[in-house]
Amino acid sequence: FAMKATRESYWPDSFRHKEAIIKLGAELGHEVAKIFATDSLADLATQFSLFWTRGGLGEMRVVQTDPLLIQGRNCYDCAGWKLGASPTPCAFKRRFIKTVFEDVLNKSVRIDEIECCSRAAQACLFSVSI
Image 1 (tube, rainbow, N blue to C red):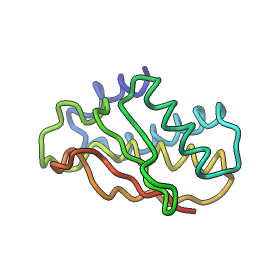
Image 2: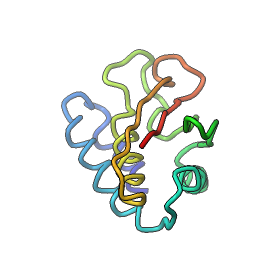
Image 3: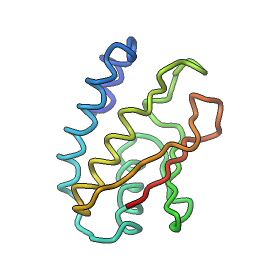
């Protein structure tokens, strides 16, 4: 719910509020990380994808495990985003995922967005590496 509300309050002028969006992604990530218990990157990716999908945040799934690729589509933050607008709505999502994975695994994690719905891709695709 908080993430959906964030879209409504920050996204209309997201360029100006990008730092706030990233900070909020980290803060919510710290809280959400508390619900996961695993030391496996692949297991966490599966659990996180279920959390995202069941929570009504969009559809998320693990596409492959080595290297780890997570695909998101029909996500709350991309809905209605103007195609080609800058910045993309994914700054929040990247920081949220990064923080959850770092907190749960207690390791530094790199998240790269390979494809983005707001850039005319069919889905957002994230590479996750330790």
